[in-house]
Length: 153
Image (cartoon, rainbow, N blue to C red; front, side, top):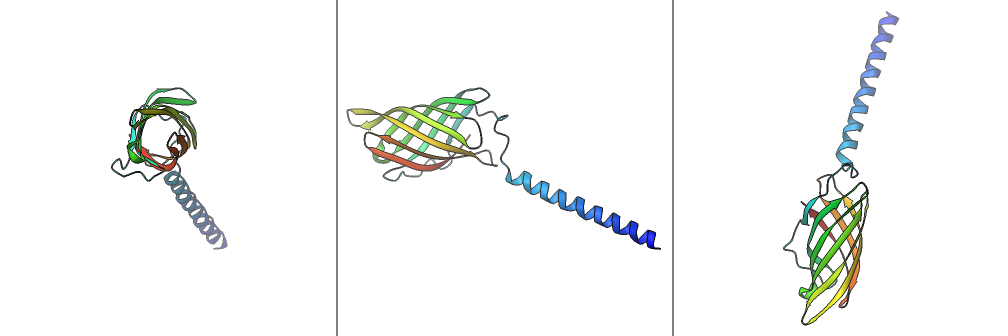
């Protein structure tokens, strides 16, 4: 009888151990972004909420057309609309990873006859829904800019 009781206890313990492992593994899969090194980023990425209005120091309506990708870097054309109708246009590059290190440079226009260079630096955080949360900081001739934007294909 002791042998049967011991066998039942071992089976129950093994079942609970497996059940706990399965639950923990499924939770890990749900909360982990996809492997960014194997992901293709080619194509156009846009703000998830392009109709939002930028604040005095932020931009909205981000567009990034990724035209080139290798094992460590993605590059492409970049556009954004900032406060007071300032338009940014240039190129953006990111080092692939989680987080992604982003840089963008180009020209700011919409200031009447004046145009000036802009620079942005930021961090991209790939999300499990295949979007990227971008936190950025930069400067134009009209002042500093910073913000957070969600972009998706």
